[in-house]
Length: 324
Image (cartoon, rainbow, N blue to C red):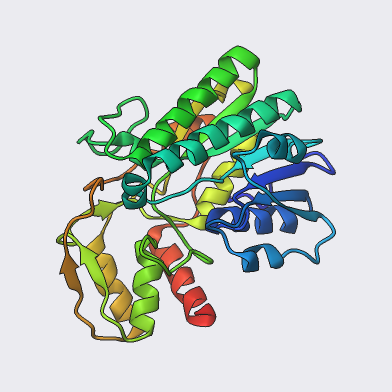
């Protein structure tokens, strides 16, 4: 059923942090299309101005250039807000290994500022981005909430800390918090550039330009690739979830498992190109296999993802062909 049928009170105001990023900008678009108000917050450190500019003509949209590391900014942004969708964070496991202090300040302290501002301003629901990286070296598949291993990167640690802080804010202060443990989200507007770009847009751009992509490791690592529409559904359903489900984190995925090498050859076939990949070293801090059990999100949030990997990848290929 997706999310387009979901109903919120008239004039509901959503604050989306990280709104100039991939997931944030898609959330802005979906909520504006449903007729609700969006206040967007981003410092444009990793997000793109063009993702902000898409909506500036919409009277229900307001953009604040600001940083979640500044509490006053967070307080002002939360004024009059009903729902917070906190997507602001620096991603990338390898980059976090190079910059642990910055990741702590940005991803942990920044989220804590947002939690505190949401509490003080009486926000109804606080939904935030977590990550499948919190499972660390726990070897069992599918990944199930409550069965986590040793963390493998500063990025993973920041997301785990966010979950613990959010749980405390529910328990101590009665703020309804919901953690979204994203599994390898992909889709329109995901950035294909830079050393830390996600693999699907990076491969697509390189193949469309006739370049040879590099696969880290042997390509036999597997991921639960999750199309962006499923993530929008999860965030919005969390905003409508009962308080009994608050203080928890949920796997947000499709529940499938795709091998990187198969994806690579699927993309070459779809694009009609014949380019063999390079194979590089494994990436430090990476989890070899991930596949999600989504039954908890189904049960407590009513999450019922519409888009399989196959559905999503067709739409993603189409978008990159038109927009790169």
